[in-house]
Length: 280
Image 1 (tube, rainbow, N blue to C red):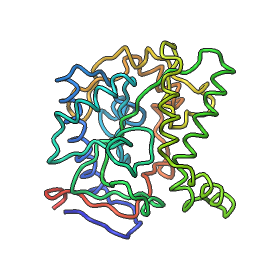
Image 2: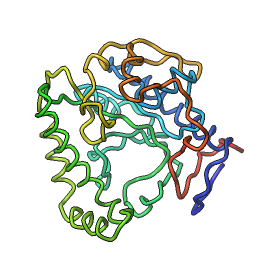
Image 3: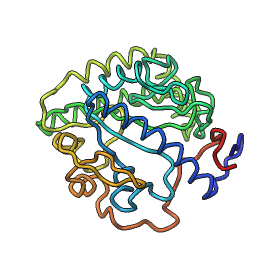
Image 4: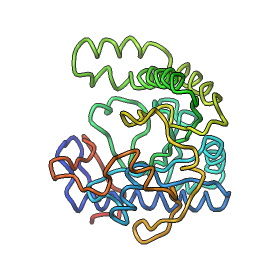
């Protein structure tokens, strides 16, 4: 069982490949549930980029992202309560883990550890995880999208405050986060839930508790998440954004250009542990 506790050194290539294997198992489980309950989703962000450019994981990537519309996310959460293999996985969001501080869900692999630097003190359950991003409507009118984006920014910082009070790069920033952290995070989630009801029919969507790429007008096109086609990922077909070229160009620019070695980063972790049977 690969394990490194209290060691901030980067994972070896072998360890990273094993971690990707754990993530792939989580994706297969998500796909099984979504097919059984007819829940649409797509490979998202770096995972979609990996599928297009590498036919699987980006070689140096240590996470896996999918996205679905908010109504489908709620159905998926309901389905997980009935169907998820709880011997291996835990569905994590603020409704299942009272200490969880992010505005999206996760499929957490049990019997693992994965603590990012600066988050070791947080009380939420930790482990290797697949991220599930629910998408919500945003205003069509550009100035209102700016207001909406600022609201999302404030709510995101309020949720991040528990981590930011330790990781802020100056004393002033850490103090600011400490003040924000005084507000009960349940209030923030309630405000975020209210925001999900805005602009349900808009042709623009975003994930409201994650930053949008700079210069991308704070939104994606809804049709990108509603018009899907299967794509090969690690030797198996999964649903993806059909017009992946438009999405990836919007999100990354020249997405087929492989970055130089100095820009190939994994997330800095202070500890990780793989389940038994991996990397042994």
